[in-house]
Length: 188
Image (cartoon, rainbow, N blue to C red):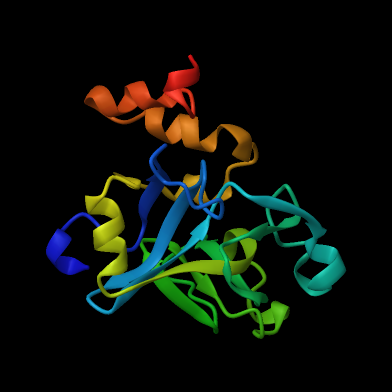
């Protein structure tokens, strides 16, 4: 998605009230990959009730709180994707694929002893969000997503209930006003 300029790895997609797909209502998605062939990301504010210890026990002592699987999106629900933050860019573990800066994706098949000490943070997502070559551009153009810059901390917030509002609130100009907008302004 390079021609749109501002949509790339690390970018956040914040669902607008116009987005009616229940899979993405009120969500914040961090893009992990985006190019002319499509985009892939994970929903940051949908924790599940499933403990990481119950499905990926070796990683339970490494993941951030809450120590649950997050519902990353409606695609590939039978798989897990780990988003991590390196302690040091000079100490890149086996199984690591950088996304932006110290943020990246970790292959969960990597033996944990090869990773210990290298990660500052880790979160595990069941499933992901994916878009075809033109699909995300079209959704942005129709007003389904606010496209904003992300921070590493966005991927690891403890209180995901306020993430959408917090991300919008820190935006410049009138976009920050949407932080307090009701889901259906007609009911206000």
